[in-house]
Length: 125
Image 1 (cartoon, helix red, strand yellow):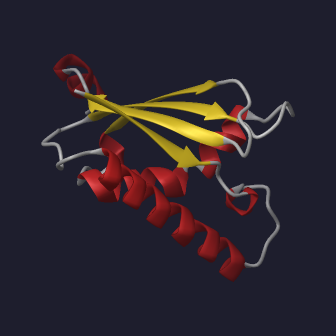
Image 2 (spheres, rainbow, N blue to C red; image 1 turned 30 degrees about the vertical axis):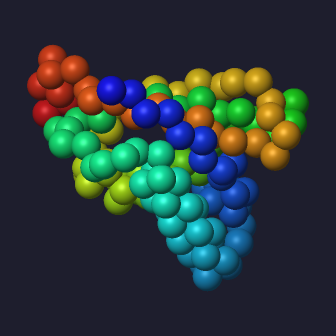
């Protein structure tokens, strides 16, 4: 079973390059993690019993500006922690893929979750 969930565009304060006060960053992290957790819980009827998770992430930016993929992956950390909280799988068991999609008004991150193939799980150890 594959679940597709739309998450909010990651706040610029989550960027590794953001020069913000630690308390402002902490608020952004908490907000992102909480939002991701609630959206995943709403999108998945029951907690899956997976050992590893194939995580497919497609970034749909809010405009046509060129975003650095590595920077967006860094911004995803709090969202991935929220996903891990919601499904009860440690995020070290995520097998992620990242891609850029077409711009969407307001921006969003489309995440697809499915059970990882057993062969892939063995190679991750």
